[in-house]
Length: 82
Image (tube, rainbow, N blue to C red; front, side, top):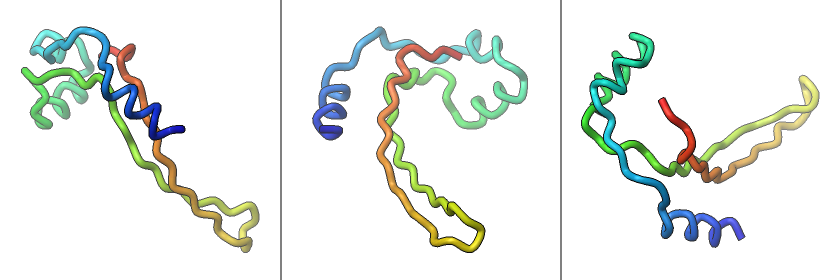
């Protein structure tokens, strides 16, 4: 089921594509501006969708067995703004 949802999201992008401008970067805290500038995002398209894979471990007791879990998490970032 998740695979079908991911395919549907990726095949039907919504929203307008916008470019990360110097003006957008200037509205952010200076440390964020510096990091994004060094990352090379200026004049590039904003991300519309991101798919992340997460792996974690948990113990219910200090000396208990460790339970590992890997999870694919599609994230819709269409509504987030800088």
